[in-house]
Image 1 (cartoon, helix red, strand yellow):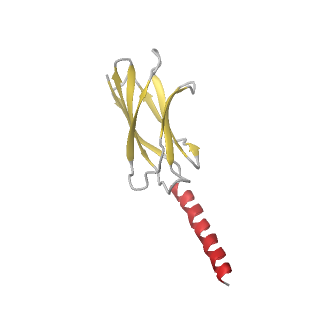
Image 2 (cartoon, helix red, strand yellow):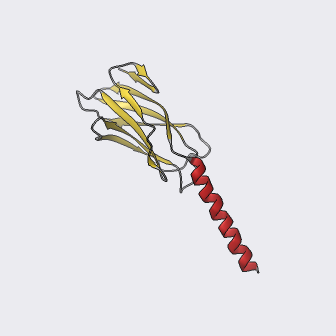
Image 3 (cartoon, one colour):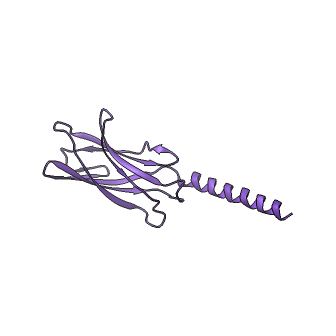
Length: 133
C-alpha cells in the first residue's frame, strides 16, 4: 500500500511539473538597449519568462542579422524564478553596413521565441529598443 501511495505521489508531482512547463510559456524580449563603444556594441536585454526551475527557464538571447547570421549570443546559466523581468548584457560585434538586427530569446522548452525585437541601429529608439552612439 505504501508503495502505491509513493507511486501516485510521484505521478502527481510529475503532472504538476509538466503543468508548470506549459504555464511558463515562451520567453518574451521586453526591451533591448544598444550602445556603441569603440568598435563594438554593448547590448542590454531585458527578458520575461515564467521560469519554473532547471527544466524550463530562459537560457539565452542573441543578436542576429536580417540574413539570420548569429552576431552574438548571451547564454544564461541558471533559472531566474525570483527575478522577473531580468536584464543581462553582452558585447556584440556588428559588421559595418549592417543596420537592421533582431534580438531573439530562447527557453529550454520552446526554443527560439517568435517574439523578437527588430532594431534599426540608425534610429535612437523604436518599438522595445533604444540605440545610443
